[in-house]
Each structure stands twice: as structure tokens, then as C-alpha cells.
Amino acid sequence: MSQVLYIPRDSVALSLGADELALAVSAEARRRRIDLQLVRNSSRGLFWLEPLLEVHTPEGRVGYGPVAPADVAGLFDAGFLRGGEHPLCQGIVDDLPYLKRQQRLTFARAGLTDPLSLSDYLAHQGFVGLRRALSMSAAEIVAAVTDSGLRGRGGAAFPAGIKWQTVRTTEARRKYVVCNADEGDSGTFADRMLMEGDPFALIEGMTIAALAVGAGEGYIYVRSEYPQAYRTLCQAVDLATAAGYLGADILGGGRGFELHVRKAAGSYVCGEETAMLESLEGKRGMVRAKPPLPAVHGLFGCPSIINNVITLASVPVILARGADFYRGFGLGRSRGTLPLQLGGNVRHGGLIELAFGTTLRELIDEFGGGTESGRPLRAVQVGGPLGSYLPASLLDVPIDYEALAQIGGVLGHGGVVVFDDSVDMAQQARFAMEFCALESCGKCTPCRIGATRGVELVDSIIAGQQRERQTGLLRDLCATMLDGSLCAMGGMTPYPVLSALDHFPEDFARPSARRAG
Image 1: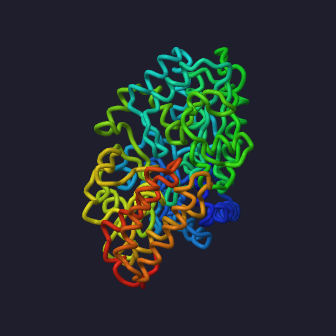
Image 2: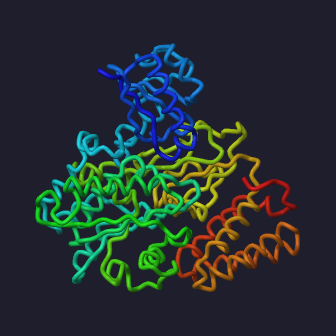
Image 3: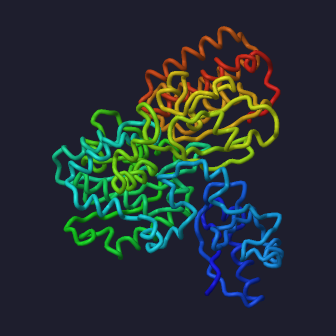
């Protein structure tokens, strides 16, 4: 019987040489006349160990990493196929504290399976939720999602069940399910990991959504910079269709759902749901005024469910294990789990899925291992490039939508970027305004003009030109952008700017000498 090895095939591992490692392992096995079964799984989210090579043993999967092709011969000599000792040996991967302390629901299969193996997916509770949904009425499916407390994981945190109910009860000849997979926030990668590592979970979630509202067609709008995710999804859709999990007659139940994968337009603003709809319709990606809401007048003018990848991929476990099970995780109005993406100046960056309620300090210290530089932590940005900068004194706040809002923060898509004490927060504030100026669709004046004027004001403050007056003007400008912008692009740009002004005023009171972190 051949020995089973696992080497990831997702973007992180590939960028670090996983393909070259797989070739080296296969060549060395042939040279030694050893029969191997090499499974190309996905990353488990322990990025500092990639490429992580795992070997199946009776005790569990033993990991070695990070492994380079030059290490391969030594691993064979050390008997790694039997879990032998080696400087790169990490032990039983499931027992690593980084994984063992997590509560993985949405990412339960990530790193365990071959992402494009239907048999693997089925062996790990795949399509259990879909089969249950096929036995339920549309109203019962929507009620399960509503009762679970699932909120949109794309940033807005709107209750998914309410959105689904609106689409379900809106009369229309055609309805759509649209997955917003245009993940553009800096420091976020959960969508990409899910699409590359467990694409059938997204397909299953979208199919359940279609059954819930009576939609016959769906689209996955994938960020253009994610070629591996795009290819993986296209293959997964073809496999699911051929096996009867998509198509005109899902599992012989008489209901159909066609699913399409589309590349995004390469614009940050197309991550906004109405700009995404414009792009899908073949138009320039510009924000639509609301109302009407997309749930009533969405893609091609039809009622449309629009959720992001993690929201839709969370649905199968809710249908498979029940709303009460999912609601049992979290606290307050934030129920279930959230895949947090830890990056920046941190020792152990990666993906950590936890129930709502843990603190930022626990996340950074216990999972991240502190700063990579070893210098004191100074700031954490939560919620992408338009999220607030929080000082070290606020790290004990629970990771919860309402708790972060109370201190002027946003949770967004769950990206957490760490900065040490070498960061210049005035430059970070400038970056936020410059980012908005570059990425604005230009439709509304507060965003289009405000961001450009914001860069000029920050530059004036840094240069020491009438600092007090210019700071007052910057705050007034931020208030205009907050209240007057058509979408979150301009409406959230003030968050990083104001938080930098409020928590790190000293960086605006002297000429900027440090580079932005």
C-alpha cells in the first residue's frame, strides 16, 4: 500500500515553492523506489510553515515545514514517511496549539482534503446540508438561517436571513444568487483560502440559498488577481454539475440551479455590491444609489441574494447541524465563528477561525506570537485599509461587531494587521486618503474630491503648515465624507484618518521621518 503525503496547492504554498517541492519529493521517491500517493491539499492557514508537508501515520498526520526541495533527501533519510524526527518536524499537525485552540466550522475541511475531490468532500460531511435543504420548504430554510444568527461576513454584518427573506417574498419571474468574491481588502485572504481549499462548500451554500429563494441561476464574482481560485472554482463547478449537485435537476429533486464563475474587473470599488452588479452586467463598475435594494432590484433588475464567500460557505454547517448548534458559538448579536486573518508585523501570520468574543490581544499574543520584529506593538488596523487604527491600550476589546463599533472601530471582513513602534501613523492616515483617491469610482463628490483634498491636508499638517487650522479642516472634511458619500468607499475612509489623529496625535505634530508601516 502506498504512503500518503500532502503538499498544498493553494496560492500561499505555490508562491513559496510547493510545486517545486512536490516534484522533488516525487523524484526522490522514484529514485528510492518508494510508492507514494501525493495529495495536493490546501493550506491549513499556518503560513509561516508553508510549504507544509504532511505524512499520514497511524497516530495522525505529521507535519514538516517549511520544507524546501533541498530538504527532501534529508527527510527521506530521517524516515519522515513514518513520522521520523527531523529539525523541520512539527509533530501531529492537529495537536499544534495554533490549530487546536481554534473553533473551525467554515474551515473545518481546509487543509484536510483534496479541494477538487468530491469523494473527499462527501467523506467530510459534504452536501449533508444540501440534502437536508432539499427536504425542507423555502420558508424553513430561510428560518434556519435566520435563527442561526448568521450575519454577512463581508463587512456590513447585515443579518443574512432577513436579506434572504426579502428575496424569497419578492415576486419575480427570475431571481439570482450572487457571491461577492472580489476580496480586495489589504490583510484579508479568507475568501481566497476557502475558494482554493474547499470550493464545494461555497457551491453547496449557494445552492442552498437558491433553494431558499427560488433562484435558478447564480454567479461567483472572483477577484481578477486570484487566478488559482478562479481555476479551482471553474473545475469544482464542472465536477459538481457532472455529479448532479448543480444543473437542471439537483440530486433528482426536480429543482435546478446553474452556477457561473466570472472574473472581476480589477477595481477595489467593485467589491461594493452594486458596483459589482454593474460589472457583472457588462458595465463600468460604479456604485448605484439605494434604494432600490439589490434584494428587490438586483442583478439584471431581478431580486438577488448578494453575500460574500464566508457568509455563503457558513450555510452548509447551519443546515447540516442545525441553527441552535451554530448559534451556540459567539456572544450578543455576533453569533457563530469568524475566520480572522492575521498579518502585518506578526510572527505567526495566518488564518484563525474563532467564535466571536476573543480579544485582539489574545489573537495577537497567543496565536500570532507578537511582532515579527520583536519591537513593541503600537497599532492594529482591523477591517481592511479603511478600518480604524487601534492603539495597544484598546487590544482587550472583544472581537464583536458592536464592541468594536463602541470604540470607533469596524470588524469588516476580519482582517487584522499589526504594526510595531516604528510605524508613522501620519503616513498611514495619508495612505488611507490616497488609496481612496486612487480607487474611487468618481460618482459622488465627497469621495472623488474629498480624498484628493484629504491627501493635501495631511501633507500640510505633516509639513507644519498651520497645523491647528489644517487639522480642523481635515476633521470637517472627514465628517462630510462620512455623511455624504454614496457608498462605504468614501464613507469609511475617515475611519483610519480620524483614529490616527485621535490615538496618535504626536505623529502629526512633527515632520514625518519614518516610513509608513
